[in-house]
Length: 280
Image 1: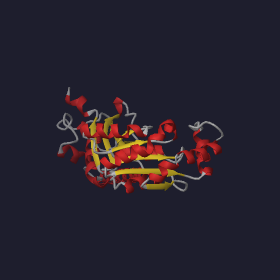
Image 2 (image 1 turned 90 degrees about the vertical axis):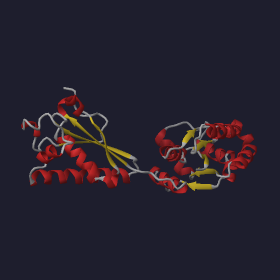
Image 3 (image 1 turned 135 degrees about the vertical axis):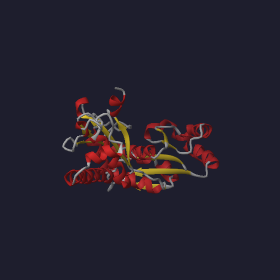
Image 4 (image 1 turned 30 degrees about the vertical axis):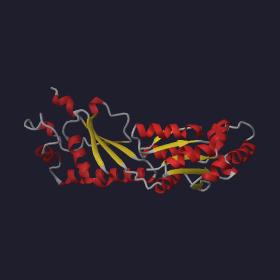
């Protein structure tokens, strides 16, 4: 993997690019003067970090005099050194600043700051291996461009968990599904102490066509919600499936969803309240 230097105009999407790289497993150092690129390289080698990205921009303007020398020395040690420079037209930068209400690092009138910043960062742009004009791009589209540029795979993660409503729904779920209308093994004395992970308990839950039809609609909706989250650029989505106690129905449904939605890399992260029963 390359040693990546990310630079560009303020408001052009550097934070988005860095977040994308970080999500792909890069170790990120923001606002690093060029003179410290070599030290960061040595540290990453010592710590066996194979994916490293740093950012250098107008905030490090007092240190840009060492840019050329620092770049030459590091490029001799890293054949895979890659400089990514982001830019956008002044009108788009102005709109983005008006949305965030942040101060420009050069701190005068914005349009004047943009022009001064272009001149200040011209040496960084000149050494860039890749220049991306983010004027027409959304944050998600820029993230996709960065992923393609470095041939990174962004695997979507569908996280499934079961719970019992009587213990309160989890707060961190993106979607909560209620399966309390399914047949409840609790009312079978032989099945009551067991869990939805066992085949005959799951068979009780899905004992008739109506139950399987209901499950099918739940599965299709979870697939739709997770697929839309993936298409929006999210790397993960959490679905919590609840029954009354969190021992039978929610456990069986969650386990079945993990199998049926394997194309979304679905996996069970926790049967949150099943352990409460196991400890009794």
